[in-house]
Length: 110
Image 1 (tube, one colour):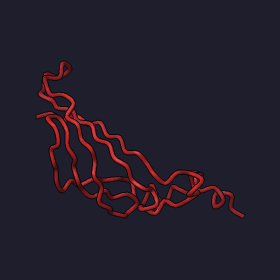
Image 2: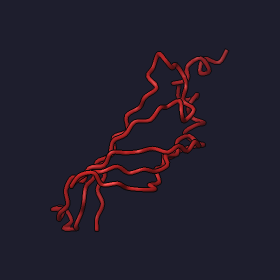
Image 3: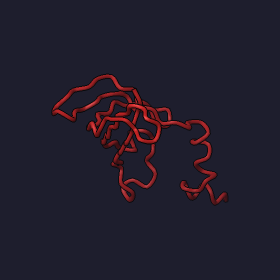
Image 4: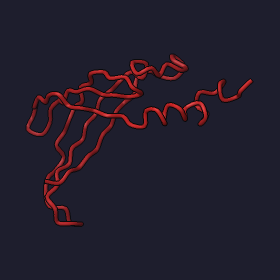
């Protein structure tokens, strides 16, 4: 018996998923402002070849000149929750929770 088949967390058992689906992507489809510095962004999250609609809570953190390169930059935070089973990751549910928290911190120049 192949021990990696008994352990879905073994590198060999997940290597094919990483090779076939190396990225998780989010494509925004809408934004709704609900405060001076925050709102919600809706879009489609693709993970392991499955695309599902997701809503993220977004907060504007700060904008200004970065001291390291003197470029104008703005920072944002986003949070949300998904069910891993919605994307085909059902191993060990309910022993390992189905709900996964997304925490995104990003900065861009303008």
